[in-house]
Image 1 (cartoon, rainbow, N blue to C red):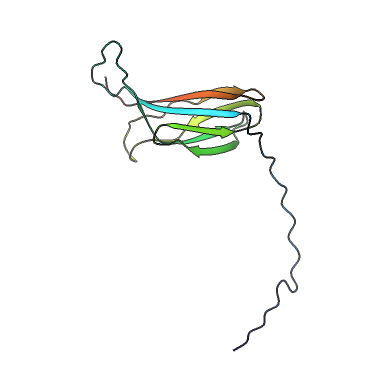
Image 2 (cartoon, rainbow, N blue to C red):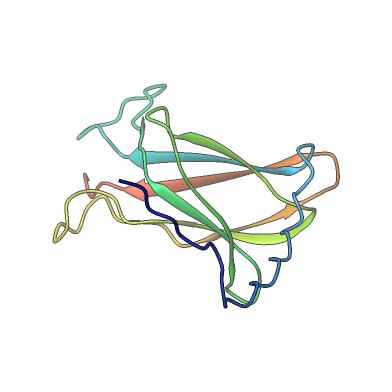
Length: 128
């Protein structure tokens, strides 16, 4: 059996999408996400935080999302963005309906040309 089909017959060509500029790899944001405290009683010199893997959004001042990523199981991610000021916002953690760990407020960072700004998001476990 032989079938013949006409590709694009009578169709108007779609416009070419405008490419999104690729940010320079030499500038961006390094995000660290941790949950804490993780110890019911903290002793001097004891670290009572643990890495947490969550979704993170990078937003412009107008609230538009520039990038979205997920931190690794080690609680880290790097996102290349152009120099400027951004708000780093952590997504929810834990199971739906649970109050903890509670997501922190956004962190404002300024990215300089040729550098990576650091942003740490601290999730509250509720342990006191």
